[in-house]
Length: 542
Image (cartoon, rainbow, N blue to C red; front, side, top):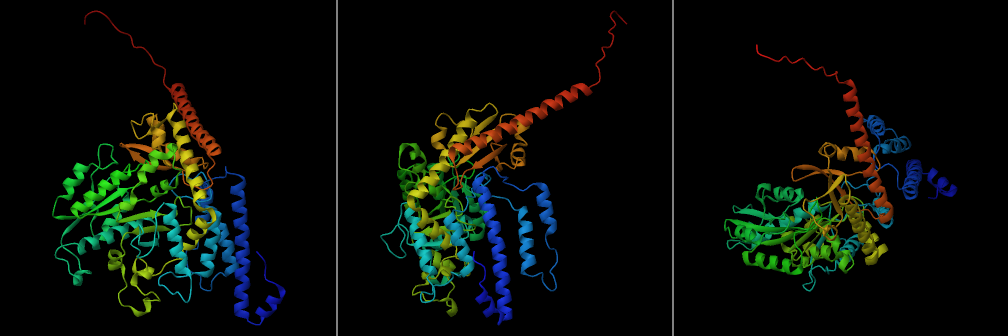
């Protein structure tokens, strides 16, 4: 970054307030830039850096936080130093390729560069102002390229496209809210007693969301949409993830309900898919049409299986995303496998009318913008009236790496998950979940590895022990009532050979350390035990 030139300093000296603020800003940015260079370089050169700060760093950073509002302000220079000091308390979730706790992803170089411009230009993508900024055009092209990445077409109000409505959101939860609220409006419109004057009024009839192993965000969205989390009903088959069509049809036939069928496209603990072919999705579509239900897909990270090569190695996983164009709406996360900064999600739908009916700003003249149609203003088809320019990193990363770049990236994530799964499957000390997975376990594996320790004593502290190494991070979950660990592989920096060796060593070391501790405790108990004295036994009668 170039520093301020002498000529510029002289000019700005004549404008003390602006010049001083600018110089402080540039100096602060230079320090942040240097810090960023150091951090990025360190993680690029050495993949074994700590994923988590240690307890002392956390404590020191937390204690350094300001607890009161200063009267005169601390100034930019001091505050910049303060921010750099407390940054030691942040984890390396997106920076490290060994942060496996959540499907967090990372930030590709192209997305990171674009995100710096997002803050610099600070566009508000609420309304369409075509004569004032191209920001909306960037978002539309980003959505179009995103749809193409998945093998679909997106064109607003073009009936030939699979998706005619799309927007970027804060994440999968917000996208699920859009899906369920759009469903609600559609179900109101399709009711025989519907009239346009009742669009903004509550309705008396009950709604239900029928799903299999639905994510918690779906229940949260159901609460926000007014359905109620209690009306999210599981209609799974014995495998817990596939649809039991007999249960589904039985529930749909209950006339007191208006229904949404939600497809889990990538279950959070296993990465499994609720449907397994285009024909199955087509059958689901037919059933929904027969009973007037809305078909929604929660594809937070599962949608990216469509990027995998079309060959036998990945065919089983790819079948889980076949036929998704049969859905009325689809929700997903971009800050996961697309590897753009938090927060960013996406939402596509077949029709804009239900979404616009719920989220339109009405007749507020200052929010009309330059759009001819209401849906041309993002604030009329989404939750927020104020929106960060999160489209720019999406546009940048898709343009930089293209279809082949993402095919390679997602393939490496899947390959690593499968290599780790194989190691765990063959391990004497760990058990691969779900229970009962046979020799076909690898073809079922997407990017999630679920496992537990064979020793129940180790298993109770397994997640804590792994994370205490600071070498990698996993999340704790429950499966069949037992504690379990989840490894989610989603970072663009994945190197299959290197990372599999790294993860397996960490897991082996965790077991070895626990075994040694257990043996030491047993020896100490034996040494400290009181000598056993045999009491005399008297024979004969009393």
